[in-house]
Image (cartoon, rainbow, N blue to C red; front, side, top):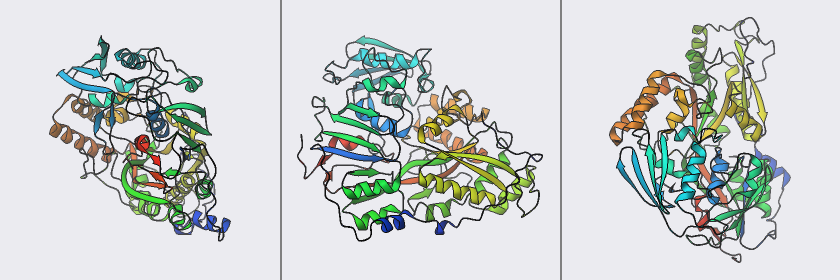
Length: 536
């Protein structure tokens, strides 16, 4: 684990950096205007008829649904693999492979699988495949990061070709969300990345080509059991540079960009291209993660000071161009379990200084160049992420904290986060359906590899509340318990809420049928068609 903090005996002697004015940071719109003075729309670039091309700022890390944990991986994987249930565009769970599910009691569920679904190689999908998928995650030597989230599941019993019994170790209110695991064929193996090229699912698209860091090519499944897509396929093209993504869209080599846009580029694309642009409020949650075993960050006063020192409003106004809403916590206001009455910390740098003094980290030279201590902050090398990091560095320097910004390509960065190799970092949580996600993120038993409590947070009161909430099926009581959990987390600050992103999609006018999901899911691609291009 990396620790580069400075104690009062070992203080960085670096000079203060010039303060960065957020409204003076060069914007990409100016860069694009300089690159393309008076240019006209470029002619369409030839590509296979009916193929849709989507730009991504970073590619997936794993496509096997048993191992896919980052948002891009999960979104693309969900096009290749079906699950028993799937959230709709309002994040309500709907049956997919499941014909029905029935609770016999609070520990036993019967699930009947639809007949007629088949894998891409023609094999029928049956209860044996469902059982194998869950068993392969649950087995003791499984390296699946989803094993911890299924610990409540005692066994999956085969009752017949299309019928299963899920036996739980105890009452578990959010059981139905566990039905969203993508189903693989019986015997499928992918215990390392080399197996990704051979993935076989039952979804509307099959994997045609996967070049990590470059592109993922999916082709339409003509025998899809719900009816084939009207697209020939979808190419996800990884373009890390935001300017290049915008230029490729203007040239016609890209058809659609969802959220992977610099905020400055939205008005530029609106005025310089024929783009159809849609913006909606979403539930994608940005936060600053904290290593709670760090000798400085384990102090709550320090975490509170960090929260008071960050000017979210300025970052949202100047860097995000208003395409976000300040967040109070993980759950967005539209969620049934959202609790708005929680402690909030607006920008108050004087309060941050007071808390740091009280925690024993006095500023050694007042307004001079010496910091109270030094912390490291990890993020990706995407330009907007780097600019946000520089804004955080400047804001924290105002209260005497020296922030060392370290940027990495996505795979390295995400690997460090999963391994706990960080002091501070920032990531997003997407697709929160059931508030039981708090168990995975903050219960003391969910420290990796058993869950995603990457900051190693331990709080016995939170543990008890989380255990009560997952055993209680009464919605009103669950809402009360999760409200208390949100209040305690907002007080203790094991992470710092930043904002809920608005969803933005930029598409060519001929791309029809695409729907914005609150979590940025690509589920509507199976209904998309290209109005003025030949379909397969």
